[in-house]
Length: 412
Image (cartoon, rainbow, N blue to C red):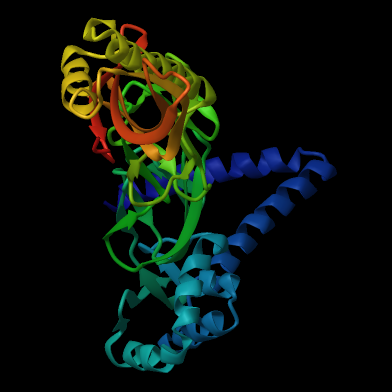
């Protein structure tokens, strides 16, 4: 054993002699550079060991308390390690923020550290080196599962980003600002919230966006959001999204009617998710069409009465022809008279129109003024007025009367 040691020592001496000889042959400038590098390495090693930790447990605790009270992340980085390793001071800012918000409990925390070497996530540990035993506080990294009401939400914590549903590992405990961004067809939804992480945890980020379901009688109407045609029909807007809820987006629908395009009133999309939209399908062209149809209808009714021929009635189905001819007029008017309409008016406010079972329907209040005169004495006239509720359906490009109800009846 002794001979083996002497052999190795001899080899080392020989190697050291060669290094020294080689160093002696260097120029003065190169010698200065090498010596400077060696001194720097030694100094760095000594400084690192001196600054890493404290010489006593009390010093480590005091440094921790001072770092928190003064928000001094550099001092904390000399006192605290993460999983036994030094970390840069910037990464300890969330930890400082957490304890700074709890600074009224710092006294209790330090008391427990002195008594038990542990308080919450903090542990006092020590490590021996050539300069003696060094004390430091240690915390362990944690993991975080992030969920959201929309899985494609991107969440930013510190300088890292993940998608909702993923696991973020190796997090230093502390208080963070979690920022989020959700891309939608109607603009990005962004926001932030403060989260505190001291152990493995699950958090749920609620993005200010939602899904909408649209209800309307006009299921084949086009849908507009934010004044843009989204190329979808009302019937397909079921759990549609994501749609931002914090942008006051408006929604309306537009239907192509035989008498022109008409759009609904705009509604603001809100968090309820259920939207009911209807269209007032009345426009000037529609009313002109209905007025022409009803004028033709009532004029033909009086022609039928005067000619005693109900087949002359136009723009009505058979049941309506029979009712107005047999039940309404024939029972109350004498066929020795002649009858002539002098005026007809529509009461739009008391009328209604709807789209039901893919059929356009209406109920129109009509007031008729007409004159009665004897066939043998045509210059003797009596004026009357009648009010009717006329049911209409749109069939083959025109409005047809399919029901009629009389509001006032005159006896003769």
